Image 1 (cartoon, each protein chain N blue to C red):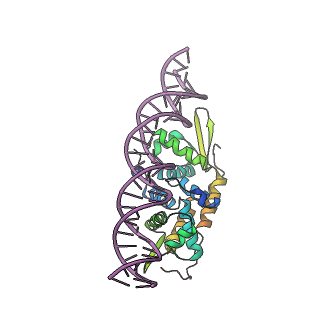
Image 2: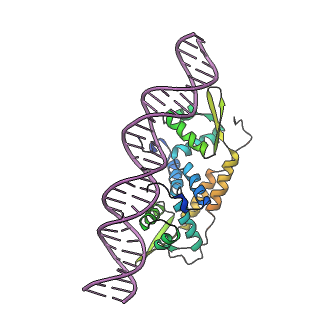
Image 3: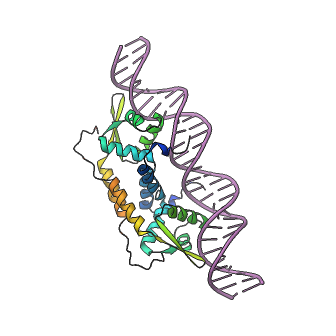
Length: 110
Length: 110
DNA sequence: ATATTTAATCGTAATATTGCGATATAAAAT
DNA sequence: ATTTTATATCGCAATATTACGATTAAATAT
């Protein structure tokens, strides 16, 4: 026990949860907002911008990259990060679908 | 170390992360989907529906209630749960705003 | 009154996440 | 060639999450 029992859920449910998990940290929210605002940046920019250690920022970038939501391109000694617009738009669509307007007219208890 | 350094981020960033965290587990995704489909249900329904123990379901319900996204009404020995439509719609709006279309024409590196 | 049903909470083990110093690797500058 | 710069990775400690059996509390049924 202790580990999420993914085998009990559908692929879509597990993927939705993973998408949410990818942005379930304020540092990753901040990184994505910075990338949206500046179009692109390197790890060092984010270390200056947020107050976290370089190792920590690098780890968060790795998670966002694993989720597919950002890409990194090696530019000499630096790595330039940016949003993957296709994945970004897919996230928007899937979250939007998940939070579809609910029917208020039903026989809810509360 | 070990704890999220919320003091480094804005209130909005921390709240967005908490919203994402609320749905960052497949069981909670499944619970919300079940509530949307059935309009309302009790804890026992979810224990039958998903394969998790009663204590585990109860814990997930508590987290969703803490996030404000569901409500529970005591009905005798049972507690009837349902979506809070106002919070639900706010989640939709905030996720939708977060994933606003990004400008593809910029000088991104990748 | 007693037994049963329902759900919350407690306690605890397993696992995952967060954060950071130290180190490794590779490019750029001197 | 050596030093500096930039980032990734390792190792570890602190904290958080997940899961569930056992227990509790309160309503319902017998």
